[in-house]
Length: 591
Image: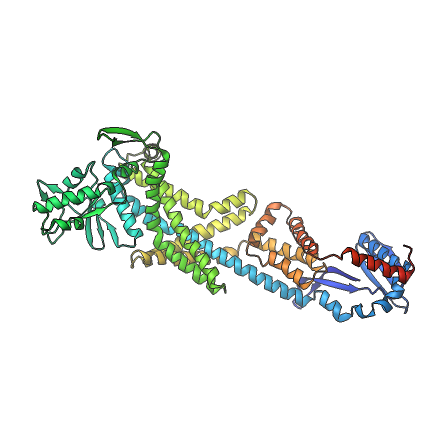
C-alpha cells in the first residue's frame, strides 16, 4: 500500500515549496497493527514478522480506515500468503519511485505548465492590446470620414440622396481596391466629387434620368470638365444607368460632349452607382427616427409618399454607414493582423494557429470601426441626435454652435463612449461580476487608457509621414509599446489577481491531484485541462469571483480526478467469479 500526502520543504534558497511524500507499507508478513489517535492526527503502527515496524501519521479517519484494511488482510490470512502467491508482483523501491512524484518531477511539471500558461496568457494579452489599439487608431480616420460625408446635408431635408450616392460610390470603389479619394466636401464649383484611379467623377442623382444628365450640362454645354477639356465621368443611380447612357449618346451626337464624336462611346462617360434612386433616398433616413417617408413614383408615374420600414433603413442607411467605417478601418485591421501573426509565431505557435488569430485581429478593428461609424453617423443624423447636440451646447457649454459644430461634437462624443466601452468595458463587466478586483480594474484601465493612448498618438504622429497605412503602423506599434511600458511600471505596484489565484491553484493541485494514484497519462490529461489549457486564465477569474478560491478550485480538480478514474476499465463478472474461486481455494472460505 502506498500512502501519498502533501508536505512543505525548504529549498536551498530557504523558500518553502510544496512536495508530495509517498510511504510504502507492504502487506506481506504483517501480524498486527496499533493505532494511536490524537486530536488532529492518527499514528498507525504496522508490525512485521521479521521484527520490524513502520509508522505513518495521517488524518484520524484515514488512519482508522487503513487499520481496518490491514486487520481484515491479517484475519483472512492474506498477509501470510501474499508473498508466495504474487511474489513477482510485489513492487520494489524503483516501482515506488515511478508511482510517487519526486520534487524534481513536480518542479518539471510546474515549469512546463507555467511556461505554457504564461505563453498563452502573453499571446492573449498582447492580442487584446492590439484590439484595443484598433479602437483608438480608428478614431481619427472615422472622424475624418464623418466630416467628408457631410452628415448634416445627408440627413437634412435637402438633396441628401446625392451625398449618399457619393458615399456609396466611394465605399464600393475602395472595397474593389481602387485608388479612391473624395473631393465633394470642398464644394468647389464644377469640381469633381471623387477621383478614382486618376479619373474625375461627378455624382448626380436626379428624380429622372433626364434630370440626372441635365445637371451635367448648362444650355447644352458640359460644365464638368477635366483639365484637358474632356468631360468628367457622370455617376448615376443604378436604375437610371441604361437610360442615361442612351441620353449621353444623343448628347455626343449633338456635339455637346467635348472631345468626343462617337455616340458608341457614351458608356465611357457614365458610371453606375451601387444604389438605385429609391435606395439612396432610404439611406437619408436614420434608424433612430420613426415614421420615415420618401417620395417615389408609382406604376403610373405619379409621385406618392412611401413609408420606409426599419429593415430598409437598417440595410441601406445603417448598412452603408457600416461599410463606410469598415473601409476606413481597413489599414488598421491589416496592420493589426500582421502584428498578431508575428507575435503569435514568435511565441512558438504553429502557422495555422497564428493565421487564425491574425484573421480575427484583422477583422476586429474593421468590425469595430464599422460599428463606431454607423452608430455615430445614424445618431448624429437623427432628430434626437440633433436635439441632444443643441441642448448640450446651450445648457452645458452655454453657447450657440453651428450645425456642423454640433454634429462634430455629437459624433466625437458617441465615438468616445464606444471606444471606452471597447477598451474598459470587458474589465468593468468582470469587476461588476466579481471576477476581478477593483484594483485590477484600475490597473488594466491605466495600462489601456494611459500608455496605450499616449503610445498610439505618438506612433500615429511618427507614422503620418506615410499617409494611410503608415499612420496605422505607427499607431499599432506605438500603442503596443506604450501599453507594455505602462504595464511594467504598474506591475511594481499591484500584483495581478491572476498571480494570487495561480498560487492557490498550484498548492491545491498538489494536495488534490498529485497525492492521488494517477497514471502518467491520467496526470497529463488533467494538466492539459488546467494549467496548460489556453482558457485557464478565465478559470482563474472564476476562482476569484467565487469568494472561496481554494474550495472552488479544489472541487474543479477533484471532479477531474473523478473523471479520469471513471474511465478506468473494471473487471467483468467472469473475472470477479474467478477471483472469488481462488480465494475459496486459498483460504477455505465458505461459498
